[in-house]
Length: 481
Image (tube, rainbow, N blue to C red; front, side, top):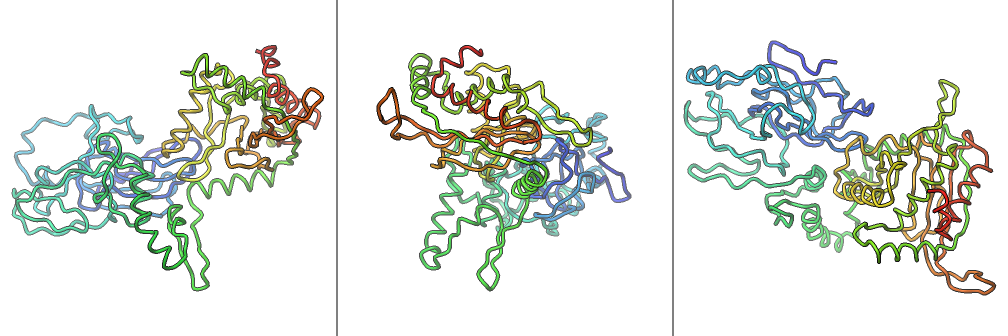
């Protein structure tokens, strides 16, 4: 599918296919405005799909004519996103014709629409305001990553052709002879969105990240400083605003738009409940042996960073090799149960965008140390809001450690289209019958929710019992490795 069209007014860049079967995206933040000059592969907009926030670069160079959608608008893949016209400098400045000729890819656009895959030798994020006379802004700085202003047409200028024009930051007044301030560095689109949703200008924040990068904690600190007095006066929980724009009607009800990840979760859970006849089994286990094994591993190889989650991942993967019926999905169109050859382990994690489910691809072929490293990496990306759509799709079985929330058990909804989920409750000291006596042991509850179409209770119970045996006596695991 073509990503652009040529019209009498310029080139229209269509919302590209963002992969993983995604058909739409919500406009989160424009990084250009009508009248701006853009370069090939310059990031022009941040959009949010059902999987992740994505910075979208433009494959064309020229003057921004039209933005097709305000922040909050939901656009379909293949619909107009941005219209770019010819660079006025090219036609207004005769000397420009004597310069080096642009290469073929710069003339027609890079054709690459994902960040980091452009054809330019260096990433070009410069943003220049072009005066009506045709001159570009001399000495313009790179795009301010933390820009939170709305897209507005360029302000008419009275400067004569050839006179340098100083870029004007929204909300400020340009002063002749005053050099522009340094660009604000905000790498994470989640941080930019959080600041924008709460009306916080990143330019006034004190960065605490490396190289002067503004972190989420910086925005939250400013938010707390502003929110606490309001809470004291009104008693309202303003933290709700971190989850997106809200609307309060006259009855006091708060309405939060069902968009992005939250809408995707709602749709996926509805499909799961509607299509999957799920059943659950659970068992209490003495996890004292597993906790002792974790400490022994830490003492001998602390660099591996193997924790409880990695050990449960190892046990789950081994259990799936014994009970492949649970590493499956149902193909209703073909009328088949598909037992999958690869084990791609999903796990639940909290993120600034809510609950997400990263996927460790190829988990079935990993060592325990490799599993631990992959889990740490994906957890860090989830915490920073940096997961890509590919890192949140393709799972075949989910491990859900809801014990971190201080809960013992749950009745989870299966992560459609997977067929099963193992839940792990909190591990705490409880009285337990041990070697003929009552003793305090590390006890946890394990629960398995499964699609009853792929197997019967005997298979599900067999898997859960194997997991429990490995938790109580990790030596059992050695016989299966």
